[in-house]
Length: 215
Length: 304
Image 1 (spheres, each protein chain N blue to C red):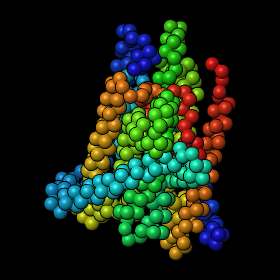
Image 2: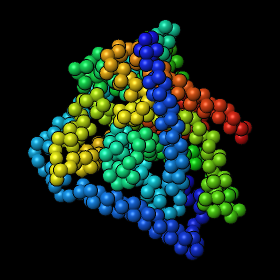
Image 3: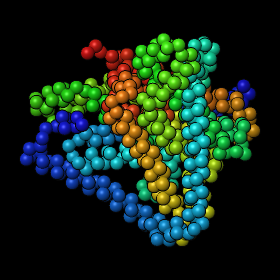
Image 4: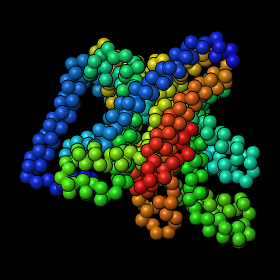
C-alpha cells in the first residue's frame, strides 16, 4: 500500500508514459505495417524484396538488441539529438510493424480470389484494388490477431523502461532501488499493465462487434 | 500465392512503369544505405581498427562465453517452460474445479504482464545473486503459460472420437491424457511450440537488463571496456552480436518451418486446419499466421 501512496506521482508518470509509448508506437507500427504489407504483395520486385527482408530481419532480432541499435547506432547516422522516448517508440514501432505486416498479408490472403479478380476486370489498378476492395475486407479477419499484437506491444514497451524512458518498469526499478519490498511493487505494476491491456482488448472487441457484418 | 491475383500481367506500359518504380525503390534503399555508411565512416565507426578487435582471442573468448551463457539460459528456460506448459495445460483441462481455476488464474496473470517485469521481480525478490536462474525462471513462467495455451488448443483439436475410444477401452484419465491426447496435441502443435521457443531464445536477451552476462551483456561490456581511436566500438560490436543472434533465431525458425512442412506432407495425424490458431501472446509468431490454416474465427484466448 505504502509504496503506491508514497510514490503516487512517479507511478502516475510511469503509467502515462506506458500509455504514451504504446500509443505512439502503435501508430508507427500500424502505418508502417500496412505499407510493408502493400510492398510485399506489390508488382515491383525491389519493394517486395525490401518488405521480405524487413520482416525476416526484424522478426528474428531480439527487441533488446533492436533497442541497443536504436540507442547507439541510429543517433550516429540520423538526427543525433532525438529523445529517448522517440527512439524507444521508433524501435518498438519498427519491430511490431513486421508482425503487423505478416498479419495484414495473411488477411489479404483470406479475401476470396473473386473479389480481386472482379476489381481487376473492371479496370482497377493495383493500388485501387488493394485500397478499395481487398484491404477493407481483410480488416475484419485481421482485427483479432491485431489485438494480440498490440497487447504484446504494450508488454514489450517495458523494455523501453530499461532504456531510461519514463514508464512503469522504470518505476518498478526505481522503487526496488529505493529498498521497497518487491512484491507489492510487482503487484501494482502488474495492475497498471493489466489496465492497459484490458483497455486494448476491450476496444478491439468493440471494434470487432462493430465490424461484424453478415456475409 | 495470391499476389498475382492483385494485379494484371503487366503490358508494355506497365512494364515500363514498374521498372521505373523498381529503379526508384532500389535507389531509395541504396541511398539510405549509402547515407548510413557515409555517416558511420565519418564518425570513424568503419575504421579497420574498430573491427580488428574481433581478432583478439580475449574478445573472441568473451563472445563464445556469451553465446554459451545465452544457450544455457535458453536450454533451462526451454525445458522449464515445456514442463510447466504441460503441467499447466493438464491442470487447466482437469476435472477438478479448484485446480482448473488456479491454473487459469496463473496462466492469465503471468501471460498478461510483461516478461521483463516478472524477470526483474524474481531477480530482485528471490534470486539476486543468481541472475541466470532468475532469467531462466522468469522465462519458464511466462513461456510455460504460453506453451500451456498452445498445448490446450492442441488437445482440444484432437478429434473427440479419440478420447471416447480411449475411455471405452477402459483407460484411466491419466492414461488417456498421457498416451492418447498429449502425443497428438504435441504433434499438431509442434511448429507453434518451436516458434514459441524462438521467442524464448529471443527473450533471453532480457538478461541484459538483470546483468546476466549473456550475449548482449557481453556486447555491452566489450563495447564499453575497449577503446579504439578514442571511441567505444558500439557499432561494430552491435553489428557482430546482432548477426549471431539473427543466425541463431533463423536456424531455430528454419527448424520450425521444416517440421511444419514435414507434418503437412504426412497423411497420418490430425489435420492442422482444425486447430484454431492460438496466436501466442508474446509475439504472434509468423508461422501461425502464415500457416495458411488461418481461419476467420481466430478469436484466440489471448484477449486479456
